[in-house]
Image (tube, rainbow over the protein chains, first blue to last red):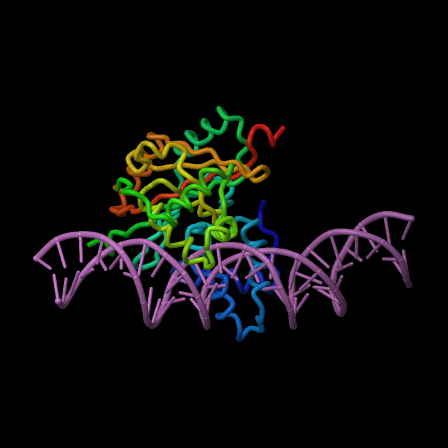
Amino acid sequence: MNAPALTKNQALVFEVLEKADGPLSAYTILDRLRDHGFRAPLQVYRALEKLLEYGVVHRLESINAFVACAHPDQNCHSHGIVAFAICESCGHVMEFHDHEVDHRLMDWTRGKKFKAEKTTIEIRGLCEACAA
Amino acid sequence: MNAPALTKNQALVFEVLEKADGPLSAYTILDRLRDHGFRAPLQVYRALEKLLEYGVVHRLESINAFVACAHPDQNCHSHGIVAFAICESCGHVMEFHDHEVDHRLMDWTRGKKFKAEKTTIEIRGLCEACAA
DNA sequence: ATCGCACACGTTATAGCATAACGCAATTGA
DNA sequence: TCAATTGCGTTATGCTATAACGTGTGCGAT
């Protein structure tokens, strides 16, 4: 799924996520867009739904938050599983991919005949700076 | 962390999870324990907190639900990262471990000097029966 | 042209998930 | 005995997400 032109609301939400230096909750995004006419959560959630579909935004399941993709220029969906390391102190998120991990998980699902749709890998802990 | 004797509430919550054939939300657990005197979410959440700590229950971050550990006899925390395959149709959950995946993720965190505290791996999709 | 359809949008209301803050009781160990 | 810890119960609240309704706009098919 490649990204078509974004609608106004989608562009606004994406911009907020790009400018943020960490993941944001939907309600935080909403607050930051009140000056642009946003009034209700659905305006944010609907935009996020599309941005997720286009692969330019990721959802962090373990903290109920959203981040802009680290390399939105490429098609993130083609890189295999996306993994995240989330610092619980400073909130920074690192995004990475590991084909060997993908491979092992795919082996497992194939063995179980499990049809994987969406895989979440999230490591929570402390980044180098915060662990010091 | 090995499990000391469970308190009454902890035992009740654990029992409900063991009897269930899939993950349950905290509020579903609450409803199933109303006859046993449970009235408020906190009674469930406090019990869950301990059960998670003891490693006899897992939290599924991607669906905000809880499951009993597949092998509570052993110490689940010593098996490395726990991974889950969650069927979005029938709700069944398979729990598994893969040391090679653990190893790859640990390599990555070591390389980044990231201090991992808790890692989530959840595969959502369709189990063999439901995919047919 | 205009009808039908798909889609984005706005609004109100509600559902679902989780914790804060208070106080009480029982246990333990110095 | 006193202080610290832990579990428990209750009320209130906050955060996360979606249902259901209606509007407007663009666009292709007839």
